[in-house]
Image (tube, rainbow, N blue to C red):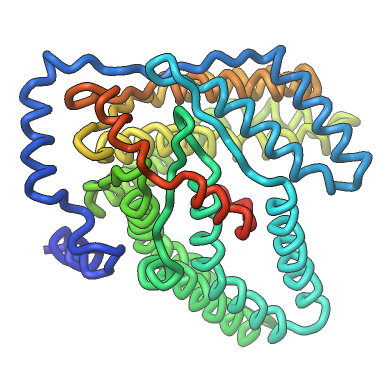
Length: 412
C-alpha cells in the first residue's frame, strides 16, 4: 500500500509528457529486444585520460588568480576546470566538451552572493525577517534549479553535438516545490517551539524539536531526490534523442532507508571503541594539547560516520540513476562499488591532510576517474548510425540560447 501511494503521487506530478517514468511502447519493446540480445551488443566503456599532475597546474593557477582577483576569476576557473574534465572524458574514442561563458557564470555567482548576504544580514536584523528570507530562498529554489540545468546542458556537447534541457520553470515548481515547503514548515515549527520554550524547555520539548523534523525530512528527501532526477533526466535531449528515466520512488526510499540503518549500526562499534579507549582519552585530555585532541577526535568521529553513509549513498544512487536511464534505444550501465569508493575517499582524506591540501587536485582526478570508468553505454545497434541521425539538430540555436542564461552553482 505504501509503495503504491508513493508511486501514485510521484507519477501524478507532470514532467512535460505523459507518464515520463514509463517508456513509450515502441521504445520499451526495442529496449526489451536490446536486453534480449545483450550478447550481441558490446558495452562501450567510459574512460578518463586526465592525470593529477596536469590538473594540479590548472588548480594552482585557478586558486592564485581567484585569490588575487578577490573571487572574480572563480567563474573563469570553473570553465577551465570543467573543460579539463569534459575533454578528458571519452566514449568510443570521442571526447565531451564544455562551452560555458564565464561572464554568464559570474552573473550567477553575484546572484548567489546577494542571496547569501541577505540571509546573513537578516539574522542580525530580526528573527521574523530572517524567517521571511528563508521562505523567499525556498520559494526561488526550483527556479534556480531549472536555470542551472538549462545552462549546463546547453553548454555540454559530445562529438560537437549539444545536449538540451527542455524542462520549464513551471514543471520545476510542480515537481520540486515539495522539499522547500517542507523545509519552510520545519523552520517555522522549530522556531516557534524554541521561542515559546526558550527559558525552560523540558525533555519532551527537546525530543519533539529534534525528532519531528528528522522524521519529516526522512519522508521527504528520498521522494524529492527521485523527483529531481526524474525532472533532470526526463527533460534532457541529446540532439533529437530524448533521455528516459524509469526508476521508481520506492527504489530511492530503500537506499536511503538502508543508509540510515548503516548509520545506527555503525554507532555500535563506535560506542564499543569509545568505551575501550576511555582511559586513554582521559589521559590525553589532561595534556597541554588536550583541547586540540578533543576537537580532532570529535571531528574525525563525526566525519567517519559521514564517510560511511556518503560512500554508500553515492555508489547506490549513481548505480540506480544510470541503470534506469536510457538514451533513445540505448541504455547505460553503472557498477560503482561502495567499498572501493570508501577506500578512495578515506585514502584521499589522509593524503590531503598529510600534504596540507596539496593532494586535493590528485584526489579529485582519482575520484572522477573511478566514477566515470565505472560507467558504460550499451548501444542498441550502430552508434555511428544513431549519431548521424542527430546531426540535423540546431546546435547553434541552443548555443546562442545559452548566452542568455546564467549559471547557478547547486550541488546535485
